[in-house]
Length: 292
Image (cartoon, rainbow, N blue to C red; front, side, top):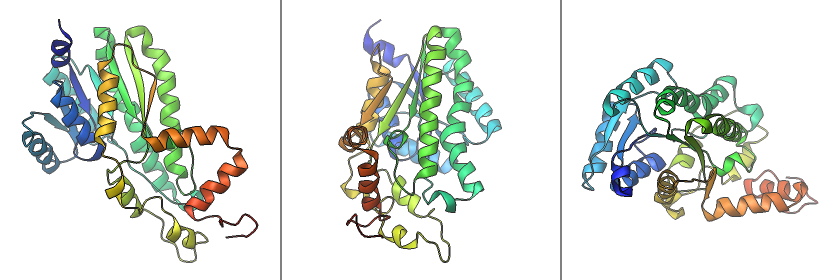
């Protein structure tokens, strides 16, 4: 069987498939011949996904799935198993969002939701697909993390917590399932033009008398224009590479900012790194002898 034939015989589920990195990944994988199934949360989003694919001469399938609902995941992946004759060859856990705000100002409900979507949902989906992969003796799980799983900034504590935890979970699972022929891969993008940061801005805590109000106003974390950020297709191509190579890396850093931030965070003393990040996000004065 040729490489192209193997690709065409393989089904891949992509969660959060109707926008951003998820949509770019669905289109990129379908373009090279994978049987792609995207999960979406409504019929309207399923229609948008199909229209985007058809506009490019591609065909993709979809299933309705709310990744935070165990019953919905069970139903969706039972449907996927029927569509694929036993379950997908690979799954790309992409669905996620950003909950910004100072750690003390993000309430329990918001924190739980962040961890539910970005951490517990991927684990739930892994539980759904691993039995079939183990039975076939092969499979791939691609968890879309972030540079936020390595490098931390103010006002992103709960998002960082979810991504650091996803990385830890992926590292443990990678070692656990290797014996069954299943490979677990982390994708760690920097900032790309997906809209996730603009959407995150609407979730900033609004509290009268917040000690962080001025810094929130100055912070350029979630409100910057995405028009100047790279196209998420570069992340999709990294995912395609991770699926297509016989021996994928454990993790793929994607983006100049992701590589640069990782290197600087390793080599700079913590006190210097904290000051630079504080200035960049508005919690510190650019003059180290002055208080913000």
